[in-house]
Length: 85
Image (cartoon, rainbow, N blue to C red; front, side):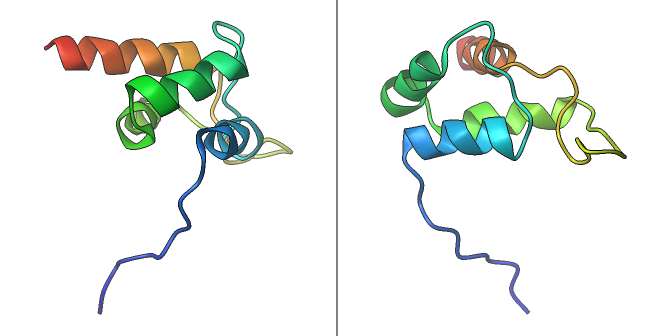
């Protein structure tokens, strides 16, 4: 049995929308346009998004499954620190 999932490739704009809508990630430190440019030019989604696992999610209510207090700027900074190490 394989655990491979066929997921469609998304554009940087689609990834930003998915982070905002489905994951509850905010864009107050940097704009969504900045995030799109960052994902397209500088880094890949896999590396940046991997750091979201360090944040807690809502367990109940209308925001169930979304991250609590997570901003894209935090993910970007963690990704940059990791690349320096």
